[in-house]
Every structure is written in structure tokens, then in C-alpha cells.
Image (cartoon, rainbow, N blue to C red; front, side, top):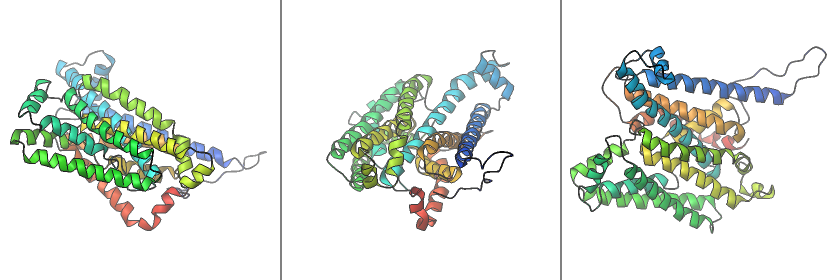
Length: 373
């Protein structure tokens, strides 16, 4: 995208100097964008610790975080045991889904591609369905409740196992397939197959099992405990690190695979690395938080508009911060501060992300320009 979202002043003439380098303006714009997003994320992170069914003053939140102790023990417990892991989960999950959406849109050159186009989310859903709806009767419910109301590592392990199974099938085919469109169709077919299996399990399940599965499918950042976060965080950080190392291959893929090969890029190896990073990011989030939708599609478009470029050295950190910010906003809205009600996270995500997708569809004539710069 060659045109910026807003116009910057052109390079100025300084006394005794030639016209300044336009590269300096691009760097300044990038740092201002990333600095602004970072300030936004930090502000939303603090708000997520303050607001909820009980409003806690910012000074008390900072005292609880610093170890000085809040004036009320209940406030300290709420901040450290409930809101802090939830905010960290939203921050990491939002960054992961934002980056995975960017990877998929670049790989498939499709502005509407998301992190689940390879069937990763459906594979994770199948793993959860086998635990909660399997032939063991109430075994899945007993296993889930026996490990705590905040969710279980067994459930997360089942979801990650289902996602890994779908990924393994796609990676095996990717070694022999040279077309990204074929991989996209394969992902859609695998998603349809796993969804059909889940529907059959739901049909033959008892109401308690169905309710447990439906609750998981709503998505939530608040069901991740500190114990689960110790597993989730390293996986997501590893996936984000791998994605950051793929900035140059992603830039090379923007004009198309043929030109990328002409530039010396090993397209097949780059594709496998991109798919692996996406699977780790999207699969881990789905395992621990449920199938969170729309965020992976909306964040890359918002960041392209703000950055005015499709260069991945700028977009990758922008999508990390933008995804984290949008996830924190969704978590705050779902919490309904001041009440004891909690809205389904996926419903809130749809309200925030659907207008972005509609905007993209209404500008279909300009979709190719998104990847042309």
C-alpha cells in the first residue's frame, strides 16, 4: 500500500543542509506508530486490572503489583490471582492471533485469510470434543471439573493434539504441493471434515457434555490460570520469535512466488516455516482460550491502514501490539465493568471485527493494492 493513512509533512530544508533523507521520515513514523501502540497497550493493561465487577483504584493496583500490598486483602487477591493472569493471557493471545493473521494473509495473498484457514481451529475443537463428548460418558466432565473451574491442562492438551494432527497432515501435503491455493482448499476441507466429526459427537452426547463443549467454544481469556500460563506463554513467545525472523521472506513473497524464487528465496521452506509459526500461535491460543475469531482477520488490516505500508519489519511489531490492544479491549467489554455479568468473548470479537471485514469486502476493487507495495 503506497498511500499513507494520513499525510506526513515532506522533508524540510535545514540551514546549510541538503533536503533530509525520506528514510528518516519513514523511520520516525514507524517509531511513533509503535510507541503510540505500546502506550495504548500499557493503558489498556492497567485498565483491565482496575475495572471489573469491583473497581480498584490505580494506586492500589500498583501497590499490589509492586508487592507493597493493597489496603484491602481482597483487592490484592483479585488483582494478582484473577485479573493479572487474564490480562496477560489477553495480551499474549491478541499478539499471537494478530501476527498469525498477518502471516496467513501474506502467504495466501488473500486479505480475508485468517489464522484458521488451515483447519487448525477445527482440529483443536475436535480434540476438545473427544475429551468432553467422547465415549467415556461423563468422564470428560469429571476430568474437567476435577482439575479446577478455570479449565484444565488435559483439555488444553487435547486441543493442542488435535491442532497438531491437522498441522501434520497439511505439512506432509505441503512438501509435495507447489500451490498455496491448493493448501488453502485443503485446509478448508480438513476444517469441514473435523467439524462434521464434532457435529456427530454432539448429536450423540448428553446435555451436560454439550454444555461443557459450548462453554469452551464461546472463548475466554479468564479461564487461564497461572499454572496454564506457564505453559502457554513460552509456546506463544517461541511462535512470535519465529514469526519475527520471517520478516524478509514475507517481504519477498508479497509480489508473488515466481518473483520470490527469482530473488533466491526457497519458497517451499519459507512456506513451511510460516505454517509452523501460525500453527504454534493459533493452535496454542485455541487450546487455552477457545476458538477466538475475527481478531486475526481484522488486526492486519487496521495495522496496514495505520502504518501505510506492507513491509513486515513494520507490520509484525504493529500487529503484535495492535492485536494485544484489541484483545484487551474485547476482554474489558466482555467483562461489563460494574456488573456481575460476563459476555461471551467470541460475540464481542464479532462485534469488533465484523465491521472491519465488511469494510474490506466493500473495497474489493482495492484489495490487490494491499499487497502491491
